[in-house]
Figure (spheres, rainbow, N blue to C red):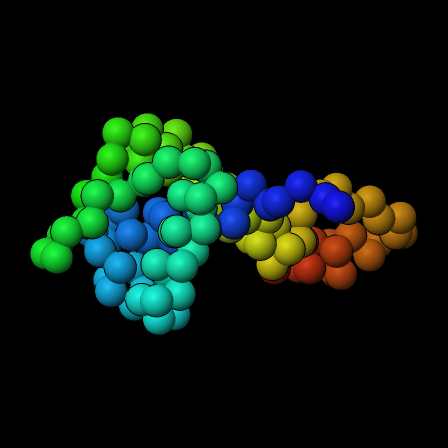
Length: 118
């Protein structure tokens, strides 16, 4: 049996921490508040500690939750930037292009095409 995915529940945790509650986090993630709550509870169970102090009016981070957010938040932003950069690379052709053409074709054919690519 493979070990559990270390990222499971982190998106729910981050959304609750950023939104300040389960309802706002659910709206951001496009799921029900119950689904967010279950994901956070599963993460807390896996870690063996509470990440949030829950009251009837608000949700606050515990010391463990604040420590996790301090480390996971920047890493998540970096991962999102890497994914965006990878997607941008596929949208625009890059790299070296070598052509073998007769000299007479360069000003008539190649230069206009290269200018259009820039």
